[in-house]
Length: 217
Image 1 (cartoon, rainbow, N blue to C red):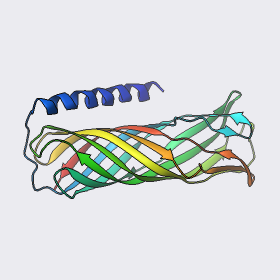
Image 2 (image 1 turned 180 degrees about the vertical axis):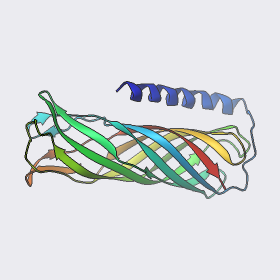
Image 3 (image 1 turned 60 degrees about the horizontal axis):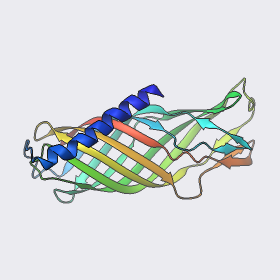
Image 4 (image 1 turned 135 degrees about the vertical axis):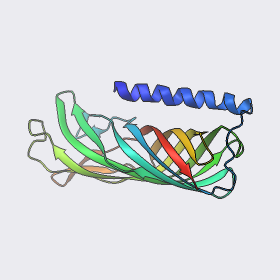
């Protein structure tokens, strides 16, 4: 997806520039004493795996959705974040013969983060590790595809989530954020069923690339 590549390049460029700004000790607005933060944003999600379903290798397309997060800063550098998609990512399932189905996924996660720099750093890179689940619903067979008229089911993905990002402070309250998140299913991948019979595993392991605007309190 071209728009996914463009946003990915923009976020990676931001993440690459941030450590240089930090190394030069560029200072910005002082955010000391603010323990809560909320971020509203938009993310593109792209699966990194192509599941084998009923003996056929499939390709699952990614899409975009609004996201929300809330963080509590235990210290100036350590935070606990609750993050999730405010809407559903729509995924089209394709085979070499064309589109066969579509599903909706909505991930949410809880993670711990370490924010580099000080409360006066203008750019604060951060890394995090946590646990996620991705609810799946809206499974529909393509009317003209190989699964037409059949009932499709996909289980819930669960596992570890790794995060890397950067906050750029605009004022003591407002900041901009760019981040990349990788979700790895560590529970054996959710089952895929057709008319109740197990036909494969939905191993998607998506990467999300997002941007957002946040506020601290």
